[in-house]
Image (tube, rainbow, N blue to C red; front, side):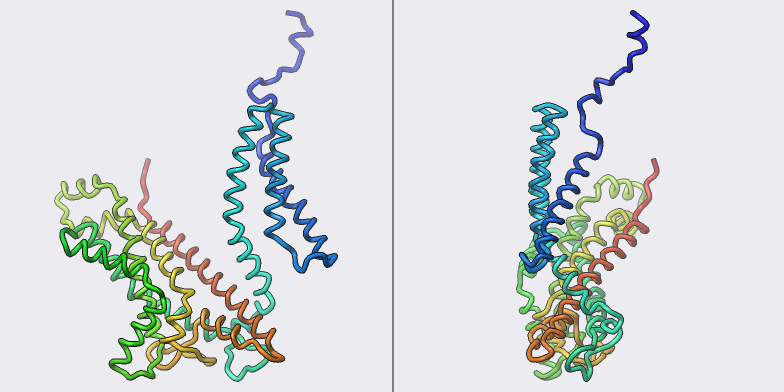
Length: 361
């Protein structure tokens, strides 16, 4: 072997002819930027009414499919190029499935920023006709009604799921499962009518209160909590229960100290899903809680405004000289509702992570 051969730079055959790591992500983002710039120019020139983020992401993803295939074909060969093309098509299908969510989020953010100010979160609509005003009364009402609904629904739902998984046998368990499935599919307005009819029997037909709204929402929450908690509890390995029984621990203490802590993260997620299911309900709250323009901190007395009803009333009352102000308040109310749901999910994740059992290696 000559000296020239020894001094020649060595090439690694395992990495030769490969695209750099992260190149696919850079191509995808670059494709989005290209079509984002194109649609931004079209919006600025007046060819389109607004910036079309859905079009930018869709056509940018299609461009990415073409670019990643051609680049891989030139650098890595036809076999690897086909593999990357199929992978990119799968990613494209996933992105297309997300386009409605992206469109919804973008529209709410862009339209809701018009009134996303301190006044909106610190004032109510009392004595406000035109511009100004806020949704503080609706935010407070939403939090109070949802909190009370959760306090009613979570214990009932968890205890029911524990019974079905740990104790339930025979016709009673099958009957509970059947009625829970039926309750899962009932329309939300039926829950509102049920709460209204129940309280009208005792207090008369004209009664409205935030607590009635909590009862209506709990009717919708309980089956979701039961079904999600039941599935999570069934995922706890039976070996953990049997080990606890072998140590002489009674069944109720095994459930309390072993089963529930082990499934805490999943239970928290299920509870948050049930809250997200009902926090945006409008029809039952419009029937039983009513609407008002003033602050009300008492769940058991008089009408109470909520964010979904606030958005509905502001949009339906948009007319005349102050129509745009009402529409802006409606969009900002929708954005505030989405932010509340996101914050609740973040808090739930933190709680689940903090209290989840720690496993050693």
